[in-house]
View 1: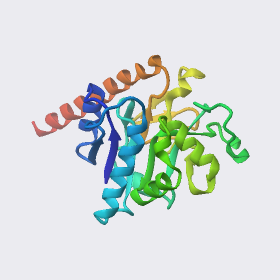
View 2: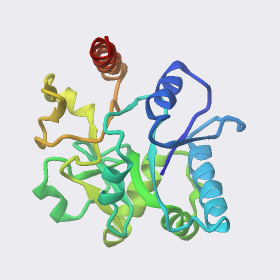
View 3: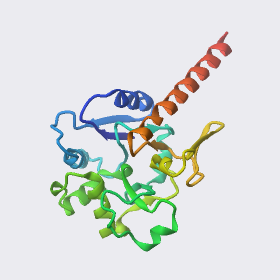
View 4: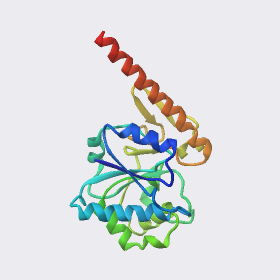
Length: 235
């Protein structure tokens, strides 16, 4: 299964993401050959990638997309993500309506604590994404979050939102709850939904993104302890 991201530069956070998923996913990094003055290349890269996948006969294979610089993939089981795909693109959900606060979401969304689309994490097929990008004139947009939110509100039946955070916890929730994420044994628990998300997305201001380093440190320490136990068993 492919895990796809877009990146303007080869930063440490991207390196950590690649190393984290290397044993479980084929990690595809798009966009390093482009000049970035806005987020338009993010949409253009997804279109080009989707076209190539379709041409190669892989148009109906689900893939996972994550933002390159502020996400940790916690669950490394590709089958977990395949099971989440239900024939429609599944986008992360969050608590805040941005960048266009006047955007009118379906009333049913407000039955959930996280009624709004977040574009930093999704599961889809190349055929899904190519069709949506082709139909909705993505080249007119310089903001991918605004683009996908507007496409969703025009056609909510063509999408699913991850209201209960099985796919992704959008940790902009820290703005309302400084303890939005906790560890329970071997599981991460997102207290907005009391689910164990597969991916942690530290979207929002810099103070939220800095929290990512704490959780990366925890995972590295956990891996070191697991490795030490394995060595101990050998001897």
